[in-house]
Length: 360
View: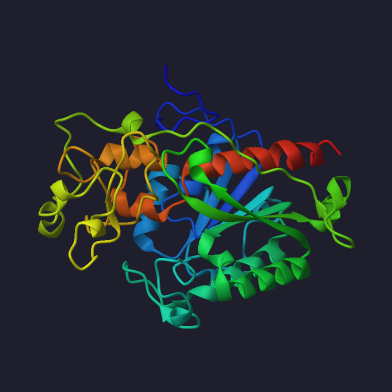
């Protein structure tokens, strides 16, 4: 008997029932629409998105048919004076500011303050200030709730100063702010993916929910505890004749038989290289699915010398199986928030805050 979960990881857009009865959402840094699909699964009506990457926007439009789609940097989008009236009465403003500057897999401090450009060739941006542009937009639109997702690295070392500043700026924008470090594998997602969610409630709506948070501080109470049963790789893997997304690179192929199940390829490399590739354990959850378009890292099958298949990647990231993308699926899914992860967060926000606010 398969595990039962609040939201399915094995699903299709064609068969999904999007009720659109929980409230309205607008998504920034929308990528291909991972978070958008999560809000839809939770019953929200996603009005549209802001995205700087034209190829990502093309994918988003193809799959979501947004009412509003703004292809531009948030630095210019936040200054617009011609935004639709609907965006000034949102239930949730969603955003996933680019996070490579804070990722533990990147250069971190060495990249802070530098202009960066993504692979698709869009405008250069200072990535570590985009979060504050997003808060400026929240200050302008004044949605009931703001939800912002980012990497775990934001809570580590020198990056903590950004968290302090994020709290200060949300306070100035008129919001109570809290953050939660969540693990997707505890939320019905077949991969270990830790992400920070900043969940903010507009101050004029918060009075019924305020509780003491220390000696002098007050915060609107909300629970973000998830304990769904983990989904091991064997539940989502394809059969023996599965076609992998990419051909195994020679550097990995020569070491494959020397690597033990669940172990990193660096354990068999004489110089300890290839540390980002590993042989998946069928009885364990996959590690974080990386945004690769070449199999230079990530999971390899435990008994077949191959990378993951397209279907395995889609299931591991809880994207719909009929997702239409002209961009590499592994890159797209690895870059995005898992829809089921967002659906769980959005459901808690609705049940604990929005449903009660809407009755007042």
